[in-house]
Length: 120
Ligand code: FAD
Image (cartoon, rainbow, N blue to C red; front, top):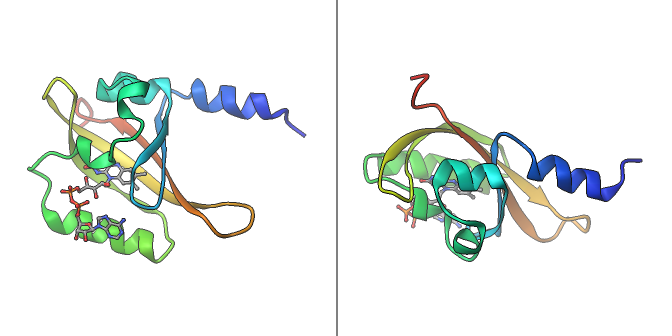
């Protein structure tokens, strides 16, 4: 099979912003593209909640739909208005998938997003 380090390199070099969180959206890992898109350094992002990216302009029902979908163990796709570390809003095209560990116990989430402000 593939060497494990290749999996790591592929995620590290992904042009899409990737983050891995615990069940409450607390950030455990971010890749360099995440740092580039959001403006947060990895040391800064890890330990904080994904809600650090939220902008008040996204209606509450969007987040409720997001969590309802995730709680039913499904993949959520959508667009959120995010806020860059410098305060600038951007439109994020986001996919969030639940990740179960091998024992099927611990629940984590994989978040993948890109800035589509220019494309909108
Ligand atoms: P919250 O306090 O999060 O509450 C909003 C609503 O969601 C409430 O109704 C609350 O009951 C419900 N909710 C919150 N947490 C949970 C939970 N653990 N289980 C069940 N229901 C819950 N948000 C962004 O704005 N931008 C992003 O790029 C982004 N990326 C994410 C990536 C991943 C992998 C995950 C898991 C979440 C991501 N989120 C993102 C969602 C983020 O965690 C927040 O829920 C969201 O930003 C709203 O934050 P809030 O503080 O306004 O409200």
